[in-house]
Length: 465
Image (cartoon, rainbow, N blue to C red; front, top):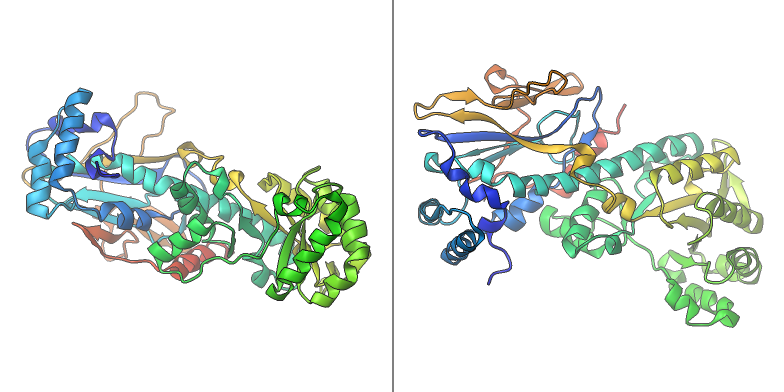
């Protein structure tokens, strides 16, 4: 049995939908969007290309058809064997679909479609909505992570701009992905982790970095530094804690930076006595940056206290904006269950104490990759138009009786720029304007292959005032 069967990458009830469309239906056009409305961009589109390359590029085989038919029969569902044989014999196993999408990394308001899908074989009109499950899953998760990571950057940037001299250069290094172990699978770690890398260039997620290389051609999308964990520190025993830290300097001083978890026993003693006194000369002599990681205690007070302790021991300098910057040989990273609110409070506390934001960075895990759902941004896929046997398109869609329920827009859509805004309009009203929904896939072929730097540039544009 194959690990993946494209026919079974859907919900059970979709198996019988080929019997439910009106006779003469030639095509169904659907789009993916987020419910609700906003007055400014709140959603960042990302991740479709990974699905196109890893899943939609897989051709349906006779073995897939046989397996799916057996599944459907035992499962209590009908099965369109003739339809899937047509996919196999007339289209070489590739799904006859045309997908148009926004540029990956672009930010839009809620309610603006991010992609539009239509079948290209008039005998397989059911195929568009059959793919709803897979297409929604392909888009909602990486787009939501990219959006949450964008919000992190929006939160941090004002602190950097107020307190640091090099906000633009520092921004991409402020948050690292520590969340691979927080996810449910290797694939989720890769999908979410590469979405984080759209905004930040630090990551400890090797699956994510490899995903950026495989799917977006990024040679190295994220950097990391050598770092300890409690296992490697406690292996030395409490009586040799200083030796454990000294070994980190010896082994990793040549790497430019190294991170040491320092709360195995007594964080205050480790920072003020071991790092602050016993090993201070050795830390300075190594010429690299020691990044102290407090991994317990109050999530706000503890990292702020560590910055203050290191400032007392190693000294600071005033930058061009009058804020204190730790000696270049020491910094702090906070990664113990960090949330966006924690980051705001930590940076706000440091700013109030006269410290620049660059003295600390953050590692984020489950908050970024796991504590979210499709409902976070209310992603949905809507069938909005039907083409009849004469080739005419007709708008379709729900018309809820409840006047408080605002229906999604029916009809085929186009996306256009209106000044700095991005709007959805009926495709029939496009005229000579550029449609931002560009073809990215048709009948088994990728039509647009986004490079990761292109995606990052699109995302960076969302940060401009």
